[in-house]
Image (cartoon, rainbow, N blue to C red):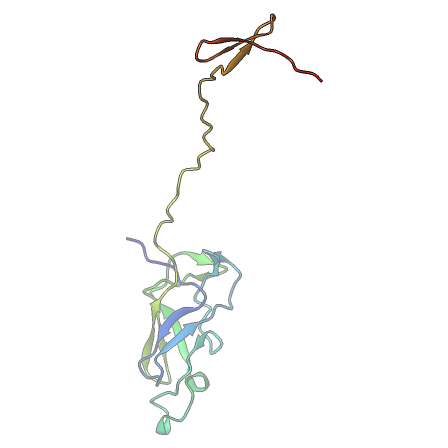
Length: 157
């Protein structure tokens, strides 16, 4: 089974952050997959790896992760090249040099479920057999479905 590619807004995780769940924001390219920007190995800066908590490795856990994060290169990237850099997959990780732990992708945001396609149908028009309700003859007689023949008279005043 192939690995899913990583999209803008993917969930990432750092175990040394007081709020371990963060977001990966794509700034490296404009290529989209499923209407979301496609992440590649250039998305590795402070502006890309967004965490809201503080780093547990900082003195008294006082430094926000975003201020101390320093990364190496992404590992376990795809062989697919997107705008001069390897695409990120759900298995990709990046080491935070400051904390000494890998940052992992926990939700790549690529939708893998097929979309249900329903057949397109034209409106159905039902044509019934025409029925004769009444027949008017030249001699002004009317024949109905019951078989009765009646004389038709015009009444004018």
